[in-house]
Amino acid sequence: SSIDGLKSMTPYLAQFCMSPDHKPYARSSASSCLFSTIFHASNDEEQCDDDEYAIVHQLLDNNVFPALEEAVESLKADVSDLACKETSGFVSASSFSRVEDILNFMSVLGSAAECKGGPYARVGDAIAKFLVELTCTGMAKFSSNREAIELISFTKDGKENPLMNLSAHISILSASAFGNMLSVQNGGPFWRQRITHKTLPTILKALQEQSQSQYPPALGTLAIICHMLCCLPVSVLGGSHVRQFVPTLVAGLVYYSKNTSVVVESEMLS
Image (tube, rainbow, N blue to C red; front, side, top):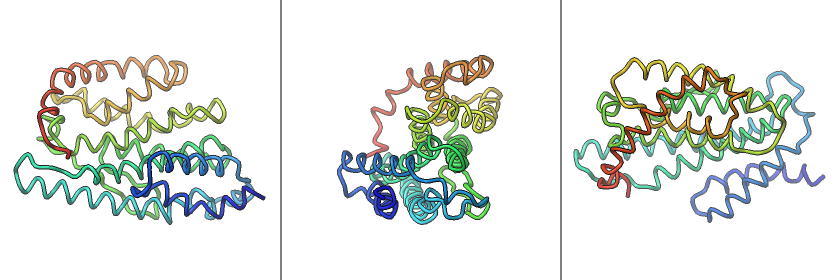
């Protein structure tokens, strides 16, 4: 069938989607094609408990995580080099874009798996949790057979002045990828409710720690709650959780609106 033919192309579509060598509109079209392939795939190969041969797992193991690990190390090296220079300097925008593109592609896989539902939803849940943990803690482990990926390290200086800290800005990448998952308009009515339930404990823990500190709200955590408030109805989030979001939301928007001029004047990103 045509779907079977497209399934054989998925590794190449994945490489195309994550490659910076292609135009954004072409990569977006490839992502849409891959989304449809997963969404319309048969569930037959999902009957085994370990999901070993699932198409999404294959893409994650063979394409996404190897590329992400390499891109994160490259970005961290750029940030480290800049810190050693102790100057305003530049971090190549391509380093950020590479990580951003891979995380965004991961969100496409996650939303496709969630919309597909059934056994596929398990890997979608895992992707959502991975992105949220990466944002809120700086480190996440996708599964027991994979090493944890450390995207950022929250330092004291970074917490005190997040607008001028590169690590704080890096955390927005995974937050935006999670927002991309939530914004997909497809699938059944319950998958957003499920991933909200799966990810809220990590988010609420981050908010509790924030409420007990004297630091401005972390950029990544602030971005995540903004995405959730924009994409999810109160009936899904729950009124009590919305009320827990509001103090961080207000404090963050006030702080960053008053201090964005320092980013405009800086040269952190070339």
